[in-house]
Image (cartoon, rainbow, N blue to C red; front, side, top):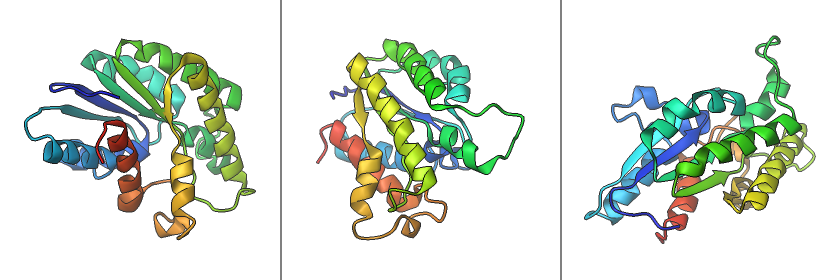
Length: 208
């Protein structure tokens, strides 16, 4: 992936992207988005990039689609990364709002298709798979997360879109330490997980 001086880079998603952005003056949050911005400023001091955190805590693919035009497309971004899906899975387990329709696998795939269509205006677009920081491959939520990630990869393959497999990244980490060492809920990446995500994005940008 090539990024250019002056590019507008948008990261769309849920709380794993949001990372308390409303509590920070630059609205970049305390997660991987800020790490990526800081790295670009540090390693490419002669270039200017506008980095935007378009993550909103609690969002599913349904919510992201509803606000895509306002929060992403209206910025006329050059580069877009989208990390969405863990809430589509999680809502099947926490039942916080029994009146809200939960997103099944088929609808998730359709929503990812719609997101890809809406992202066509960007010069570069990448998806990032939802992940669950649990070692056990038979854990119920891990199994469902992998199914949704597979749906995302199927859409991406059909459309020729790049996918960053974040589950693979965290699985590599968990060979040494459990996911709970990063986050008690095994969903929110925190400072360590955000570093792992940021590293993958910087690799896409050609940074070592």
